[in-house]
Length: 176
Ligand SMILES: [Zn+2]
Image (cartoon, rainbow, N blue to C red; front, side, top):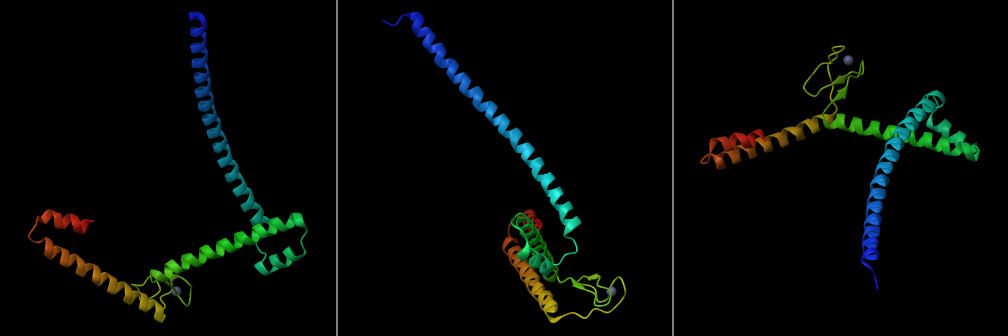
């Protein structure tokens, strides 16, 4: 027969096991958090280190030269050269996207000094040269005007629809 003492011990034991499990889980979460923090720091340090090596050893080397080096490199150097090539590729893609944004915004470069010219100015702010716009830029500006007209037409229509309603609603809608 199980005595009262045995039963009490059993319950305490089970309780202790549960407490230990919860404590272990909490400690694991804490340690994982610490690992995550140090990993973040490690990655940041590797990024700085990589950037420093890139500037020191590969800044003035063209993609073609890098590819030639890669072709004759030993295995341990190949990974490094591949990473350098990938970084250069990423950077040029990012640059392309930035110039795409400028094209979309109608920003062009002055043909004489290279300064940026906004779509609303006819002369370069830096050197005063008259801006000759390429056709696509004018096309983009034309497209933007069409979209702007559509938007204001829509707002006018909405205003007409709401004209019988509360005036504050109309102002709220325009503010949005
Ligand atoms: Zn200029």
